[in-house]
Amino acid sequence: MEIKILDDRANPLLKRHELAFEVAHATAATPSRDQVRAELSKLVKAPKDRVIIERMHARYGTAVTRGEALVYESADSAKATEREHILVRNGLVEKAAKGPTPAAEAAPPAPASEKKE
Image (cartoon, rainbow, N blue to C red):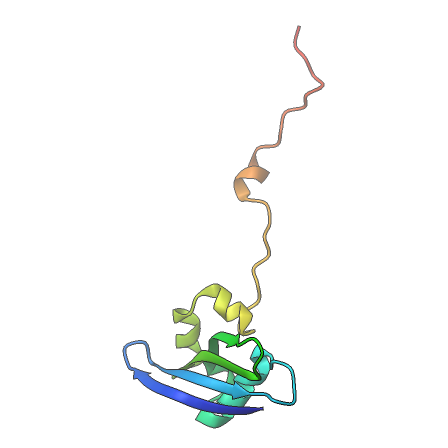
């Protein structure tokens, strides 16, 4: 797996660098998001928890994947700025479990078998 950075733009307002990259994987399948994050963190010399893959797209019939990544100055600014589902995809937070709403638990349903005559 060989990664080439195509574009690197600084975004001081959001405290990050925005990267466009290309992964050549001629002898293997499309690499996972986690593998690409690990390789990108080595290239940009940043800890893996500050590197977030926004999107990856493998072109049909080729062994090339292109994508966009964000490298934040701190992990806290990444968690404060990024959308929840992107953080879940990158393994930085756990997916919130869906449960019953508090309003549904507060009022138990009335029994249907009791009738007033």
